[in-house]
Length: 168
Image 1: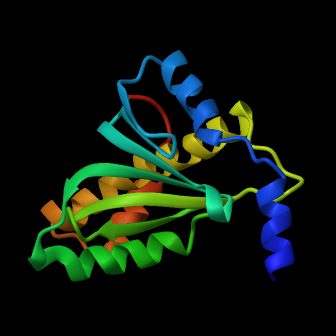
Image 2: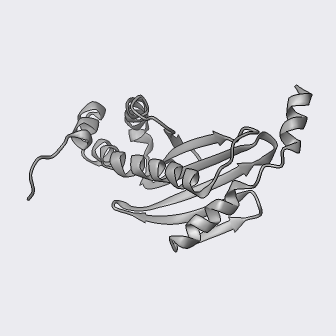
């Protein structure tokens, strides 16, 4: 195993946060860089603002991305929100939702392993960010229905996935 780790360490992975910082700057999103291994940005979207946090775990060659919703989960609603998360996660092609217990907020996260022959470029990062934010945008109303509208998780998910026909 040490041979594999040594080979990975010697491959000279480029820090993907350099690419992420460029993407964030180009979109004019406010951000803060914490050392060489972490960056957070505030990203405005349809339902409000999401906090995108990226951490580069160089020893493992893993880029961890998390988009946190501005949605506090109360102790009374935690069980039903977890049920909603489980039902949503079954549908996701990439990433997964969790409750971040430190802040009791819902986030969509994804960890990306950079193999020795892979390279994380701007296009790849932009795609992952778009997917995470898209899933937040798609399912935030379901979480709101469950937390504030007392909807059943299945009904809340069905409502947000319902295709609308026509225009108002």
